[in-house]
Length: 315
Image (cartoon, rainbow, N blue to C red):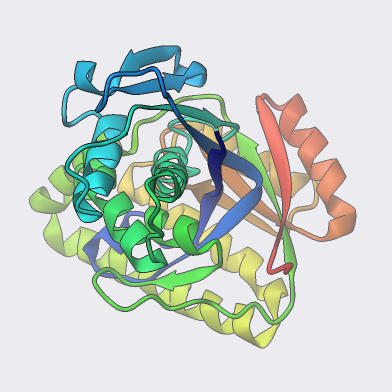
């Protein structure tokens, strides 16, 4: 019997993390160099309704009925069946693998959800639209992150750069001239939900201060959009530096991220900042193609556990 498979890329936020939760714009782009993959096969000898789940990357091998309904893997399967009005799921096997670092701000949870939604719906004989996939993945993001903006599931579903404003229609960003980013991973896992919750507490205690920081981040994201669409990507470097300073003021950076940002700039990057939730995970640096190798080496020597060089806007 055929196997049904689907994959979904990782993502990075270029500008606007945290502020995006409070209605300001953010820019995120897919990272095609890493991905999550789901493979669904029928289990002709299995009991109807039995769904075997294998996720070797997190050492999980179980069945759907042994997972709580609010487990992300269970939720995405149950939500997909419900959306497709499938009352009785045929016996099947679902295997999920991913090369996306977990809890590193690269959308690993959303990518797994999108990959499963597409493979599982194909197995059931239906094709979910991109809008349906995005909406269903967002429901699972609530389990991962508590109060997500929706940016992860959006950029990963459409696998294109997006200019994202919460609760507004999807706005695909037109990249006039491709540019190069080096991603440096601190190796520190930092669950986004915890950091988002801490920012919320800070906002509640000092609303005026935080609103000013969010406004400034929104202006940076708007300026970055103009630069990307106009092809003047050389101006993105100073905008990254400014955005990182705002994130530091929000209390979401950490010494390891700050060190990698400084090292990247010293090695020739045109600008750098943390990306994602912060307090670990990844930072990004804007580089010319010629600088990419030197910056990546410098980051690894400074303690980055891995680096990824990715091109933004390449078809």
